[in-house]
Image 1: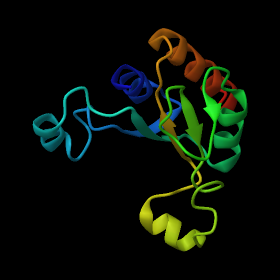
Image 2: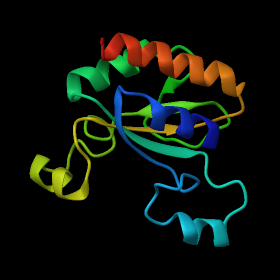
Image 3: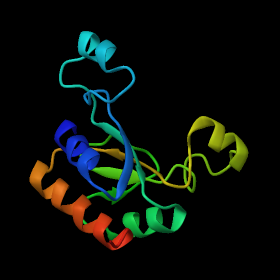
Image 4: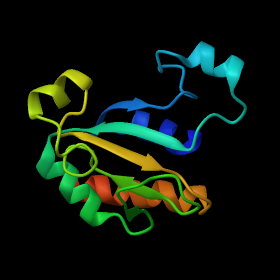
Length: 128
């Protein structure tokens, strides 16, 4: 997941990446003390909003769309439309759950396959 998070962080189609293994994460120093290998979970904000996020989720081929994350396979979801859809929009915004937010759980697939999948889906979702 850390390799995927690092790639996302350098992608101009992404505005922010949250993963405890990244130096940019607000609790990176704490994570270094408490974790080995960090987490398989990644949160990122795609440039744009719900339309771009939906296109991204429709375009991934290796990642599977899922409501519940954390299996052995790589999964992704849009919290604003899925897990937190019942939370009022103004509360979601206060919590940082914007329409551009995508969550991913990185599984056991080849890291280069996952990175390539994300890159092709981002290119479709956010043309430049």
